[in-house]
Amino acid sequence: MAVLANNLTPEDGASMTHRLAVSRIQLSEFRCYESLKLSLSAAPVVLTGPNGAGKTNLLEAVSLLAPGGGLRRAKLGEIARNVPSNVPPTETGAPRAWAVSANVETPDGAFQLGSGLDPAALEQGRERRAVRIDGQAQRGQAALGRVCAAVWLTPQMDRLFLDGPSARRRFLDRLVFGLDPDHSSRVAAYEHSLRSRTKLLKEGKGDDKWLASIEDSMVRHGIAVAVARAELLARLSRAGTMAIGPFPAARLALSGDLEDWLETLPAVEVEDKMRAALRDGRGRDATYGGAVVGPQRSDLLVWHDAKGQSADQCSTGEQKALLLSIIMANTRLQTKARGAGPLLLLDEVVAHLDAERRNHLFDEIVALGVQAWMTGTDRALFEGLDGRAQFFRVEDATLSLETTP
Ligand SMILES: Nc1ncnc2c1ncn2[C@@H]1O[C@H](COP(=O)(O)OP(=O)(O)O)[C@@H](O)[C@H]1O
Ligand SMILES: [Mg+2]
Image (cartoon, rainbow, N blue to C red; front, side, top):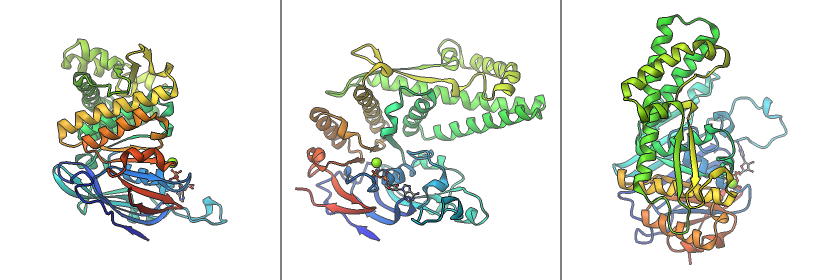
């Protein structure tokens, strides 16, 4: 078991007050980590080491301190550490009860967060996520949003503008979580109602009254989700500073029926219109699943403003830069609005930036005082952070603190 204390004094890194930062994290049976304990300052965290060392796994653990299914959206059982053996995975039995626990400093004080595979449920053969805040069991992971926010950029997101809209909606909702902690419970409540309605329609079981009450809940939560997304976009645009130095400015818009209605009609009329559309669409939704209208049909549209080019037409490097622009604009906004930005998890991002962009990003991360967790294989690319970050070498699921020059 590695116990690492860092040697940064408060003057070296950012102070722990008025920040969101992990000050201690402990993993057990989490992917390649049998056990890991880390103590941290609020300064940015740099993890460098070879492929397969365990860098992304650690970022994934941090991502599970915020609402949602983490940066890999993995099934709970997948996260449990596989012990190398010759037994086929299907015959190794139940997964191990993995856990992540952390002390998190926030502008509202210090909290202890825990997340993991519920050992009690596991004994009954069920996989359930347990979430604890200051030792108290929570009903769902949405509660984490009141304490912790995290935003990430990973290599898988290279396809964000090319693939279907669901990943773009998740990206947008994650930005909203940070500004509006209730958004994740709203999204969860809407999705729960949508699933219940779909099931009833498919089974042909629901009577009109029952369906109408579920649709009422979809209207209430669905419109709140759409309004919160639109509000974030408006605030990002009002902030008017989407571009930072060498990063491109992004222009953002939302598309969808609900968004069109909200722009032109009073809220009560939008509610009536959505309720009527759901009632009239029951036959279609019974056949095709989903729902004719709702926030699950919206899309986030992004353009490279200076080029007037839509993001999917931009080069891979430009797309990454656009995503970083959006993430940093959101971080600035959140720092102002909530007193602290989110934890930023930037997996293999820095290697794709030229020196000018890299140094600009480092400077802004330090200036905003966000705890950014950054990974890469090449330590030299992070030289711009020497003396301003805590550096760990990751090798074979073992971390060692490096002394910075
Ligand atoms: N459930 C698991 N149990 C044990 N090892 C795992 C599990 N999931 C992934 N791994 C392994 O963890 C190692 C480190 O992965 P990762 O953190 O993605 O590496 P990198 O440092 O390149 O980001 C990989 O070799 C991967 O196969
Ligand atoms: Mg990786």
